[in-house]
Length: 182
Length: 196
Image 1 (cartoon, each protein chain N blue to C red):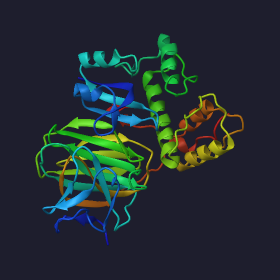
Image 2 (image 1 turned 180 degrees about the vertical axis):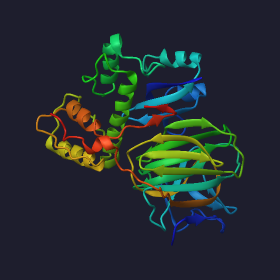
Image 3 (image 1 turned 30 degrees about the vertical axis):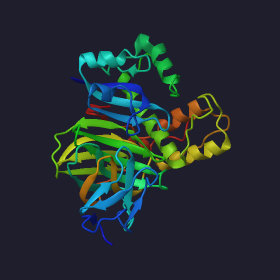
C-alpha cells in the first residue's frame, strides 16, 4: 500500500459529488477541489493493482510514486495534462521534480478555492488561460491576494495564465497531503 | 449565550430544532426533534442546520454523538453560512452502515466529498470536526482520522447535518484556541509584488 497522487474528475454520487474511481475501489483518500471546476487533486492509499486500475483511465493524471523524480522527457505530457484542466503549465520545465510541481499545484488550488469562496464564481467560465484579465477581475484578484496577506497589482494586458502563476507563487502551499510531505 | 454552544436536544418532538437553529436545506430535508434526539425527516436527502444563538469564531470545533440507526450519513457542519438551500461550508459525516467517515465541502447547497476513510463505528461515540485556517479535520472517538485543506470559506456557523442518517445527540460547538498563530511563512514576507 502506497500513497499515490492523482488529478481526477469530479462526478455525481448518491450524496452529491465525489472524486471519480476511489469510492468504487474502497480506498482511503484525501482530495482538494479546484474551485468550481470538476477536478480534484487526490492523495490515496492504494495497492499496486488499484493504482494500475486508476491510472489506466484516460481522464486521470497520475503522479509517479517517486515524487523526487524529474519530469524530464515527460514534460510535454505533463504540460498537456495541466493545460487541459485549466492549470498554467508554461513555467514547468524538464528539470523540475514532480514534488515541486505538486507543491505549486496546492498553491494554485488554494488560490482558486479562495476566488470561488469570495465571489461564488468560476474564474474559468467562458475564458481560456490566455484571456486577458479585465478591470473587474483584476480588482477581484488583487483582493484575493490581499486575503492571503499579499499586495499585488495586476498590470493591464495580463492574462489569466500570467496572473494565476504569479499570485499562486505567493499563496501558502499545503505542507503535506495524506502524510506526503511537500 | 456563551461558548461553547451546546444542545442535548432533550425537548418535545418538533418539526424543527427550535429558535436557536437555522435550517439550511429546507427544500430537501428538515432536522427535527424526535425522542429527545436530533433527527432528519427524509431518507436520501440532505438536511442541515446551524446554531444561530452565538457567533462562531473562525477557528472552530463541533462535536456530536452519532446514534446507530441503520445506515445513512450524519454528523456536523463547520463554517456554514449563506442562505438556506444555497449555503457554503464544510461537513464531517459518518455512515454507521458502511463504517465510513468523510469530509464534505458544501458549495451553494451542494455537497462534494473530499475525503474517505474507514472506522469501526460504535453507537454513542463522539465524532468531532475542527477547522483552523484552511485545514479541516475529522476526529472520531478521540483519534484524528483525516484532514484536508480548503481555502474557500473562512467563517461561518457550526451545526448538524444528515443524509438519511437520522439520529444525533449531544451537540457542542466552540472555539479552537491555538497557542501560537503564524499567519505566513517567512518566505512570504519577502515576496515581491507580482511579476509581469
